[in-house]
Length: 289
Length: 257
Image (cartoon, rainbow over all chains, first blue to last red; front, side, top):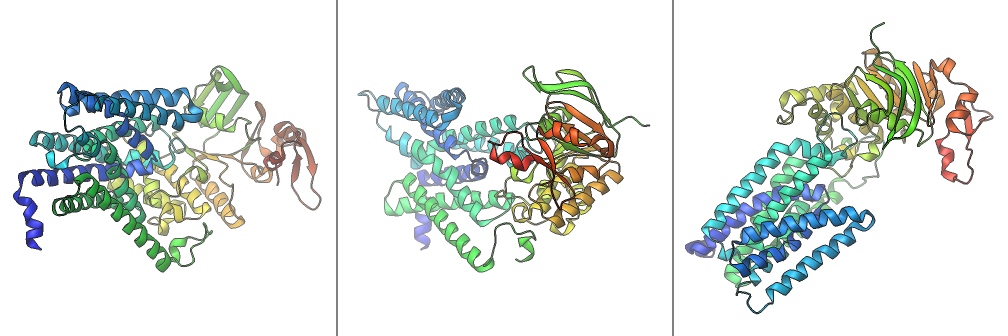
């Protein structure tokens, strides 16, 4: 058992992968709570897929991946914003068209004859191939995102609660939502290094959705979500190391397992604790519990 | 008399240069309860937006000598949101704090006081979504109190409340006014508006304003609701027959349902 746990730690690449996934887990677990509460999971996934041509372009030109990813995500974000605004009635359809087109463009580039090997890592991630430089980038950007979330916590909470409705000299909802989307974009950018273009949305949404099922308060939700993300990430890496399966996929499988467990726990708790909960009775439910 | 909480003169309000509410001419003394009557789309929301400073008058003059907060209808807030009553009440402090400051212990203490003021001290730590409609409404009022609002704009706060909660909310409004807060309440119940200090009847323009005993009359209500006022047998209040019968759901906008 000890060997099972210690063995991976004797290799530099697994240690780097563990650190990377822990950093990413904390960051995306925390911001994921806002993604879930603001109901922008689809936007987050769109950003991840839409940046693909940027990543492939960088790989083809031999530029740093982060540079290509950043360019790709800015272009994707702008296109999504413009198209969403042009066709307000069918914004989700328009966004889907833009995102799949961008993704298709990326695939076209990736399948070109002069594409370097390892383009697969852009899709599914390669946590075991993380360099020290990439770790540093993850740490710096992750810390920035976390600091911004800590700083803006109360304003995010207020705007998500009822936006404009309770406003009186408080924060501007548009500004807060815009800033949140930028932070999500930064997190996606960071996460793509480890989990790839297709799987990064899982660590952004899964742990937060699981945490929401287990608590009715924001701060515990953020802590739980970060904890679930880190644990799933570490468990996935061990699974990958010992079971010789793809790391990214193993991590996503662990996140899914965590979500299902949370759903099971929540269902069991509802049955045990609140056997006769009714639809908003006029006296508080809390007094019954 | 001290300076009024609100003074509107020759004011018209609207969006993109098009007026939706004309001829506003009224003064509201501090500490009064003002009922606002009018059909949906009659301009109540627009007036509230002007009072919070969200929109500027198209013409005329508006003076608001009070910090203002809106108390929205509770169905606009999210019940699936992971917050306690105290969390919601604390949000009010963001209106007072500079953007770089987070609410701390002092703000939470103020929020607890506000919850006590609306009679919810014991439920401060309950999940907002688990509270009843009447309790949620009072939490939103507590949030306005935490914002130190001197003028509270309530958007149909009685919608969906049962008689007990309705009574409790009316008492709360009375006590807020006694403490010197000005309260404007959009309502559909004429009888309720008659109990407050002032009434403002709106329907695209100011129909009447003043002491309800004088300002509410059958012609005023007809002009306000654009329908025919009828006396409902066996009921003290008046009912409104909507002018457009093809709109079936318009009936519930009428007074004295």
